Length: 157
Figure 1 (cartoon, rainbow, N blue to C red):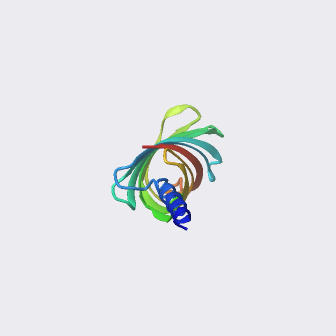
Figure 2: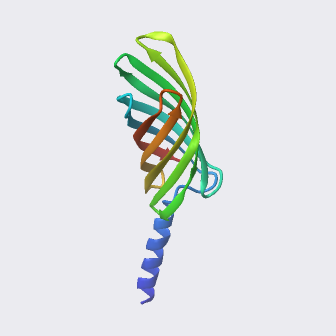
Figure 3: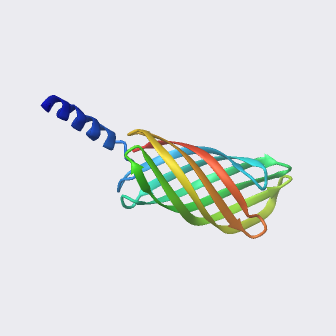
């Protein structure tokens, strides 16, 4: 009985090390997604830093791949409030601001827009150093509102 209790205790302790939304932790990620209204693939890099066990900041850079003569760069800074559903899974609502630089048909004197982001995301903490996630957000910008969805793979440290 003591051995069974010891084994079960070790399993429980090993599962809790995967929880990655802990104060002071960071992650660097790559994401691949889609912008629905402009029908563009997206490529992005981001960084996440946990201010507390639940709240983290997420600056990121996203490129909207040229389609129909339109491309764009977006700089976002979002805040997440992480709900840990288990030691290996969490989800979060997000809110933030964005600045985007739109380029039409190769003209670099395109449009710059400021906007706001709202959305939801979820992530699986596969190992203590690696996580996978899915995020959906809506970017509110004058004349260019649209929904995004992205898959994210990240190195956590």
